[in-house]
Image (cartoon, rainbow, N blue to C red; front, side, top):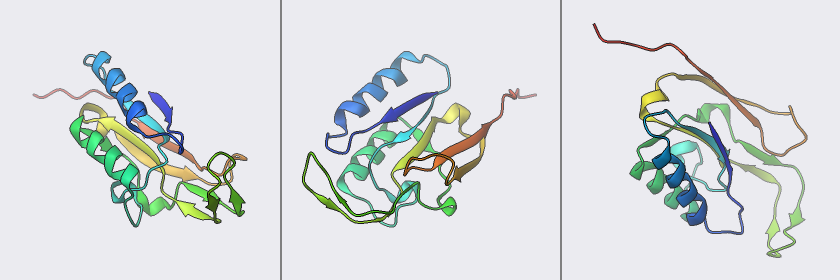
Length: 141
């Protein structure tokens, strides 16, 4: 299990290369990554895709990582205040976004169930994500 945070002010390529490195050294072990990628894409529930989302989605496709998010749970991020970003000076309006994702390798994807968001569990403006991962192994007859 890996947790990642992609700083909004930075290009996602460096973070994606770190995920590529982790993917390569995992051997045959399953991999689950969850985190704030600060990217919007319809693959994880956003009503539109941005440039960052396209880059992340293309990368996930390249590594054959599958998105576990359940878009019916709603947006993963909600902020209730208007503010200006200190570093970029960009004004940000109150609203919601689908910018947190959970992805996995194909060998464990079917063992992930009950992906849920838990609003109001922390003081963060990101909702807690949870899922069940079955420990059962399956053998063909």
